[in-house]
Image 1 (cartoon, each protein chain N blue to C red):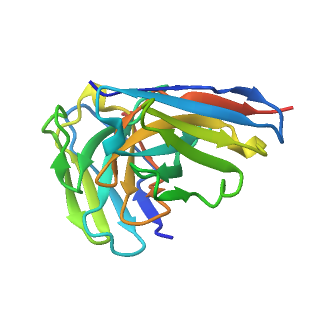
Image 2 (cartoon, rainbow over the protein chains, first blue to last red):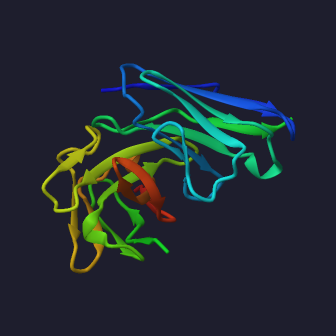
Image 3 (tube, rainbow over the protein chains, first blue to last red):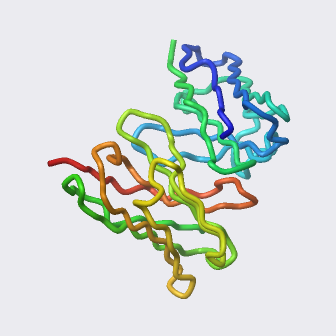
Length: 107
Length: 117
């Protein structure tokens, strides 16, 4: 099974800050990775697919990069509506595996 | 607009059964793989099961293999999850998710399953 190690598990940041979240895969997955945002009581929403492609309708302050085993989600300028939990998902092989999540909180 | 609406959740005793349904609309259901993902209270996301567009390929997480059965009815544009021998650790919100090139692009709002005596 491919393990996805996501870091940090939580972070505190201010509006306007640049935020970076990392996912590391235990083996190479090419670019078979997505990033999701989840707000309390809501379903996850896809932000990034194929590691670096922006989902239609998602603000351009979100970006993804990486391939192989190391991936990054960057929020260039944190906005109030971005405070949420973020997850990565590898879909290279079964079982599909999610990162443990990163909770982004207001400083 | 893609819509995925889950139903069938509720309270069930350990060892009991429950069948979840997901009604899909707004897209050609028969052209997409479908998935179930769950989230235990206060925890992260866990993939449960996937089914290909024609039902030819089916996959399960080890934690549910032999107890859960995924199925679909393309004529009714519906996805199902039959859950048997339920355990306390199956307590979670279950999401129905559309798959696109393996990735998960659209999610339902979820249905809560509580396993407790």
